[in-house]
Image (cartoon, rainbow, N blue to C red; front, side):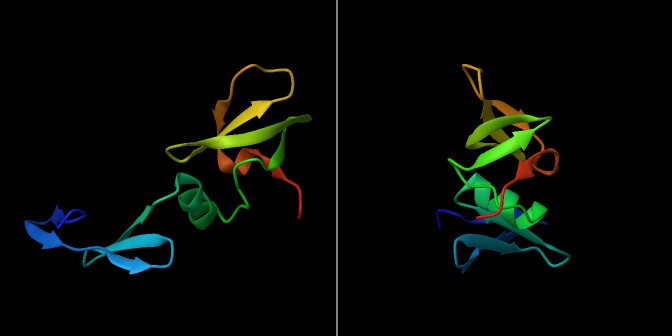
Length: 94
């Protein structure tokens, strides 16, 4: 199977739950998101979505994606996006 993973010398198959694949491991579950921002939204309970305007240290910027557990944001006046921890960003409601 394509998404099969070996854990403790046992083949584990993911369980599809909405947009996430959950890999049962016995002790805890590994959540594998198809969208890295889905993982960030789930783990950090933030509304991180591509194109959303956020605030970092009094500067506004736009979410362009994710890099591992970090949100990539292009701040106003910058040419490229940089990774920021999800809890360091201010998210506007709506």
